[in-house]
Image (cartoon, rainbow, N blue to C red; front, side, top):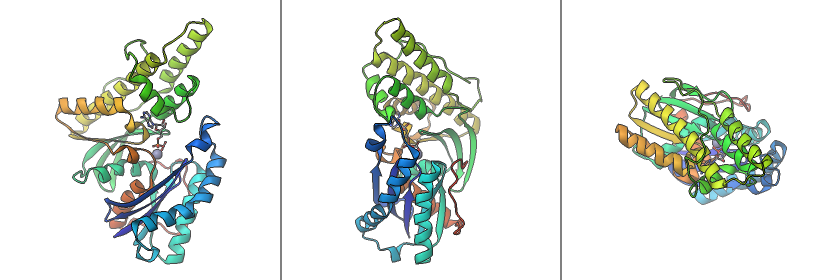
Length: 333
Ligand code: KG4
Ligand code: ZN
């Protein structure tokens, strides 16, 4: 079975062809990062216009690379939320047009579920049930994956997402968007115990997150040092901030795993590319006797392949959309 999948929820235009849910035949990703970099973050209107320009050539490239024709495609999967409304609409409109013109079933995919399903692409042996920690630029969520189409949201962030804090702090320190990879790199040469930053909501069995207090604490530290004309070590700030985020994510994930009786843990989303998070999560899982899963780096950040994998498992159970499918910027799991 061939799935054609489209992803245009933020600043990557991507199309992929997936065979039988887990085999990537093509995964073409056109990133707009250099375009948005000069503004310090994603500009929604520019993102939409770029998607319009790139979506059809990228679909063609995905089909050509996979050596699969449009007629051979069994269904079309597309991200319809959460994300930037104008950006989502481009993918949804393209997928609906193809579905109508070719008379192929349409599958509307939740972007966050797509991130989780990236793990099935990198780990052929992985099957539900497992616990997923999804950490991206817009979301931080703990999700119980009971079956391929049965999920329970255990908790999410009350304010900022983990990725948002990485991006904002890097920006204030003068590094380009997106800041996560920059902080990751700087932290490698820093002392994680140099500065004590606060942790929020760390009571047992509290699966909600809050990163706005931590973000403010780091920004206050930077401003205070600047006002006092005291230099600070960017490596130490990055390492201390990152350690606080990583410890919070690992502690809550381990608590949730024990609470739900899960012995398999998967991470997903852009921040799961973070090397310190991967190392700490792997170590904690080993200590508890849990199996740890993480998508390969290119599948951690936004891509069409993960949307194709999710669409396949929805199609297997007949979860199709019709042509009334619309973008849902605040779509929940
Ligand atoms: O999942 P994603 O590609 O897009 C959203 O759906 O939001 O995640 C992007 C986020 C950005 O905040 C970026 O800074 C962060 O993932 N990120 C990282 C790393 N690589 C990407 N954060 C920390 N460490 C990294 N290595
Ligand atoms: Zn994403």
